[in-house]
Length: 236
Image (cartoon, rainbow, N blue to C red; front, side, top):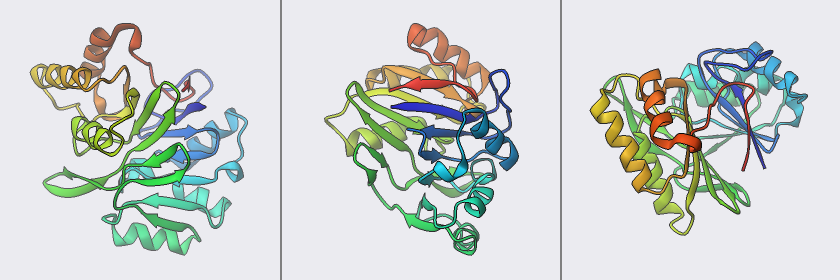
């Protein structure tokens, strides 16, 4: 199964970059939609994919840099299932309904299809206000691939939640935004050490993780560090 990065702050040649994140799973399920719809659609086209091939969208959390491309997708794909959290804003829910999307609110672990699921709502915080967020999980023969948006609940809490939900599965890959830009080196090192103790084998921090943390992950994980940017592709 393929994971294709469709939107990110950094991009491969011929792909467009922008603030935000989006990852396509198995060329059918889109996790987050980035900030700007044109760049999202252009990058999908670069991969040879029409928006009509997308069967479902998972939104990690209700922030503009993860929902920006959703509205154009809904215009092009009426009836598209959108997996969100119960705690998302009324404005988000109303807009999905107005544009003909089918909102599925995931309070807890929810299967999209066999081997692909979302964690459901994990409570985080942003600017001293509660912020619910969810992650996407893909079961593979080698273990779980875990995809995160910004990890506002903390990447450790996200990983622990998933381990609790699927205790028999080892975590093969974690990639996405880890929200570590403002952290000092001591906290960064502590998080990396904890992720390694939790059994995370490969890591791909991007988006809001921050350059300092990304360099530290690269040093600590070595050959198991993944460079994540728009246009990158991983087989899981």
